[in-house]
Every structure is written in C-alpha cells, then in structure tokens.
Length: 394
Image 1 (tube, helix red, strand yellow):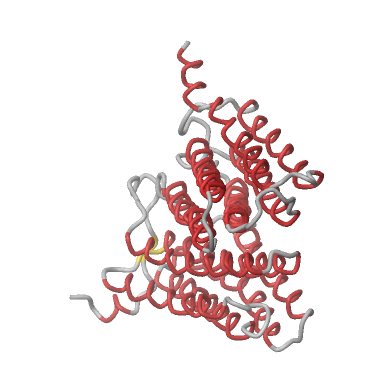
Image 2: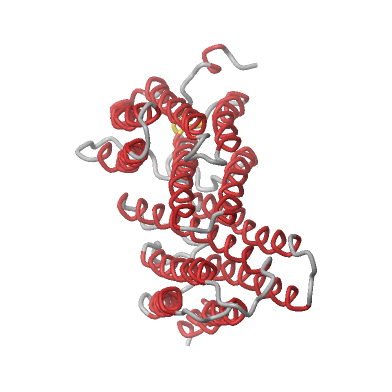
C-alpha cells in the first residue's frame, strides 16, 4: 500500500538514457491522447463547415492552444514518474480540463472563448504546479524546475488577462502567451549546468509517431464522412473516395517510411526544431482531412473549386516540405539509410510543385487535382528507404 508521502510526492525523475533504454509509451498515455483526438476532430469539422480564411485563422489559433497542452503534458510525464496509482490520479487530473476544452472548442474564438480558455488555463496552471512539486521532491533538479516554473508565470498572466479583454486584443495577448510558453525550454536551460536525464531510447519517435497515427485517422474520417453526406452516391463518388483514401495512405507511408522510426539529434535546439516541425505537420495532416471531406461530398466533381484546391494542394505542399526538413533533424545512424541531400530534396521539389498548384492552379477541377497530388505523393515510393540500404551494401 502506498504511503501518504508517496500519494502527495512530486514524483521521481525518470532515469537516464542508459538506465531505462526500453522506456515505452504506456496505455495511460495513449488514453490521454484520445482526448486531444476529440478536440482535433471537432476543429476539423468546424473548419470544414467554414473553409474560409476566417475559419482557417480560428482553426490555427485553437489548434496551437491544443497542441501546447498536449506537448507540455507529454514532456512532463516523460520527465517525472509518479509511483503506482498516483500516476493514474495525476494523469486523470490532466484529462479533466482537456475534456472541457473538447466540450467548448466549437466556437472557441466566439461565444465559447471564455470557457475554452479557462479550461486551457486550468490545464497550464495544473502542469505548472506539477513542475513545482517535481522540483520540491527532487532537490537535485529543483534549480532547473524552478526556472521552468518562473518562465511559465508570464505566459499564465497573459492567458488570464486575455480572458478579460475584448477581441481582437485578447487574441494578440493569447498568442503572446503561447510564444512565451514555447520559448520557456530555451530560456530555462540557458546558463544553467543542471540538466534532466535524457529521454528514453526511442521514446520521442514512438510518442510522436503514435500521435501522428491517431491524427492521420482524421483523414480517413474526412473521406468516410464526406461519402456518407452524399445524398445520391454515384460511381464518381466512389472514385473520389478511393482517391481520398489513397491520399491518406500516401501521407502515412511517407511519414513512417522516412521519419517515424528515427529520433532527433541530441542537442536541445535540434529537439525543439523537430518538435515544432511536428506541430506544423500535424496541422497540415488535419487540413488534408478537411480537404478530402469537402472533395468527397461534392455534387459536381468537374467544377473548379478554389477553396478545395487551396486546402489540398497547400496542405500537401506543407506536408512534403516539413517532412523534408524533419529528415535534416534526424539522429545519424538510426533507421533506414537515407541520402542527406537526395531524399529531402526530392520532397522539397514535390512540395514546391504542390505549392505552385495551390497558388496558380486556377481551373483545375477536384478529381484531376487529387490525381496530380497522388502522383506527387506516391512518387516517393520510387525513392524508398530500402534503395539507399541496397546502394550502401553495394
């Protein structure tokens, strides 16, 4: 039975890379992720109902807030381990405000702004207190955890102020808070020799990969939901749905063939770059799902649609270019052998072609657009990681 001290302890610092080489994502962490999948699904559906620049701004704003809650909780849970049932209790406490965010994310920049942001702020306050308690229970890292808490405070103050300010100033203040939060790891670690142990071997790649896999399910939801909303399903509807599923599968293959099995480089700057690139990548994958939903539920697939072209071609361009950039952040010697120039350059070229279609592809109808993007997507199968391995053996 756990003692009272164990129940109220701040957790213990997880071991070093060598001490826990087999640290894996546990079921509780995956269950925690499901709350964020609900939020992302709500955001995607809201954006699909309002596929305009205004809808896109709202989507990005709310997505950034959601992502920061996930990333902050994820990194804390890797830094500190609570004994026994305490781990379940504290994870459940983190889930409660996230569940509130899922409830109020619809119209999160409108009538539900205050309740959504109160839930967000509650989550951030809870995590800040957990960092403080972690330092109190582990004096050898307290100087670092205290600095992290101090750097969190300005962001918390900005979030609180934004709740009582009228738009558009409240959104500017809120974004400033997000930026302050995002810069905390940099400033907190600068000029201090104390460091937390390294992440467990393979943990980052697995954690982000599993979250990416769950989010990619939103692209499948987009195709299925779009087909289910068509009143009179035709052969063209089936063709559009099949192309949409192929698009989703292509994104899956590119990520997990080239990125999903590899860790970022060890220095902090590389890890932060790797993490922030994933933020953009996850967002672009969700937008791809929105675009596929809008395509499949069309009544006429042969009329040009600028909104759909911008969503699909733009998200495809961002996805390809971000994956190319992610390759440059990978730890050398891990995963498949990839050429450091050819592999990312191939994706950048395909991404630039997609961007050109997004900007100047007026007149392209939805079905030919899907075929073109699929060609750019699946062209990377011609440069499979196994080819580099074969060349290396020769």
